[in-house]
Image (cartoon, rainbow, N blue to C red):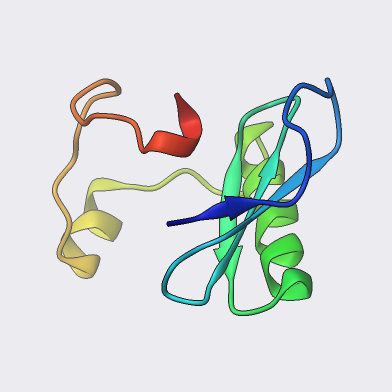
Length: 86
């Protein structure tokens, strides 16, 4: 069972969730954006990148990118949200 290291009732900051597989999820409380890594530092670096993309940074993913990565395009809402995002 995953465990959080901070009270998610705060309106800002980062919540760390220690997953059963040993990875650590870092979730920005204000935006709900999350990412993970093997350490807190790695999770924070990945979270910073995810927040930048969430705020419009980076390059958009193209159909060619999806094909190259072997992924299918989905529309928002096609999949159920993970527990930590509900």
